[in-house]
Length: 539
Image 1: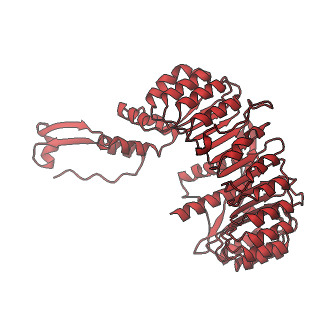
Image 2 (image 1 turned 180 degrees about the vertical axis):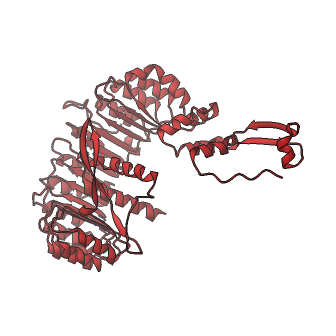
C-alpha cells in the first residue's frame, strides 16, 4: 500500500505557511509502505523554504501588495526578508518627531533605496531640525518625491542644504512649515528636475519676503505644476508663475489678497497652461479675461469666486476653444447664468465634463449645451432652483454621449427622472441626491427599465456611527445598485455575504469620512469618474 494522497485544504494563512515550509523526504528506494515503516531507508527529513527559490526582485514584488503592518511583520521572518524589504522599499513615511533623530542613521542604513519620503509631525510635538534633514539628504541622494508636513523646526538654511544634496528631486510638497521664500528659491535653484511644487500654509512667507522665482538661468526649468493653498502673502509667487513657460497646471486655493494681477502676468499669449483651478479667491472678471489669453486651457475650475460674472466667462469661452472640463460653483450669487453658459455652448464644442453648482441655469442655456456639446460625457447640476423636469427631459433627449449624470438639490420630480429611461442611451451612472420630490420608487422603476444603469439615490444610503476625535459622528454610506438579469437588485461592490463583507463595509465607511471634513462631494465624485475614464481610454 502506498501513502494516501492528502486532501485539498482550504486556502488560508496556515496552509500557505505549510506550502512554503513543507517537509521533504528523500529515500533510497522501496515502496511507500516500506518507506513509512523502515527508518533506515530515510536519508534525510528537513524543512525547506520554497521562497528561497524566488529571486529577490520577485519577493520584493510580492511585498508591494502587502499593507504597512503586514510588511513590517514579514521583515521579521528571517534575515533575507529583512534585507529584501529594506533594499527594495522605495516609499517611506516617518513620524518626524525630534525623538527619532538618534535613529536616523540606522533607519536609512536599512532603507537606502528610498525615492519617495514623507516626514509628518503633529502640532503638539517638536519636529526634526535642519541637522536631521541634512543627514537624510546625504543618506538619500536618489530622492525624487518629498513631502513635509508640520516640520516647523526646519529653516531656510536646512532647505538649502537639502536642495544641494537632493538634486534629482521631481516633486516637493510642503505644508505647515516655518521656512520661507529663501528655502523655496533654494529648491528651485538646485533641483533642476523639479516638476511639481505644492505649498500650503507656509508661515515663513511674510509681507516683506523676497520674491519667489526661477534663477537667472532658469529658462530651461522643468516645472509643470504649481499648487498654492491657504497662503497669506502668496503673491510672492507671481514671478515664478508668470515666467515658467513649461507650466501646465496652476491651482490657487483659499489664498488671501488680490490675484488679478498675478493672472494678468500669465495672460500674455505665451503661456502653456492647460489646467487652472481657482477656489475662494479674490478674483474678478479681469483675472478671467487674462485666463482667456491662454489658448491651451483645457480644464478650468471657478469655485466660489463671487466677483466673477458672465462677462469673464464669455471671454474665456470665446478664446479657450479647447476647453474640455469646466467646473463652476457660483456660490448662489447669480452672477454667472444663462448668458455665460450660452457662450460656452457656442464656442466650447469639445466640452466633455460640466459641473454647475449654485448656478441658476435655465432650459435655454442647458438646451444649447446639450445640442452643441456633442462630446459631453459627464454632467452635474447641483443646488439650482431653476433646473426642473423640463430641463432634465431636454438633457435626456439631446445628450446622446452622456455617460455619468449627477443631480443634487434641484426641484426635480419623478417625471423628470422618467425621461432618463429612454434618453441618454450611453448613460451608465446616475446619482440623484437631496431632490425632495423624487421618490425611491422611481429609482427601482428606472433600474427595471435600464438594467445596466447604476442608480444612486437618497433611499440607497445607510447611516453608520463612527468615532472621530472622541465624538460619535453619523456617516452616510452610499450603496449604489443595479438591477440583475433576474430582476433582483444587487449592491455594487458589496462582495460575498461572508467575512469579507464587514471589511469592505468598514473600508467604505472610512472613505466616507471625507464628508466630515467638508469636502466638495460633487467635485470628488467627478474627479474619480474622470480618472476612471482616462484609465480605461489609455488601455
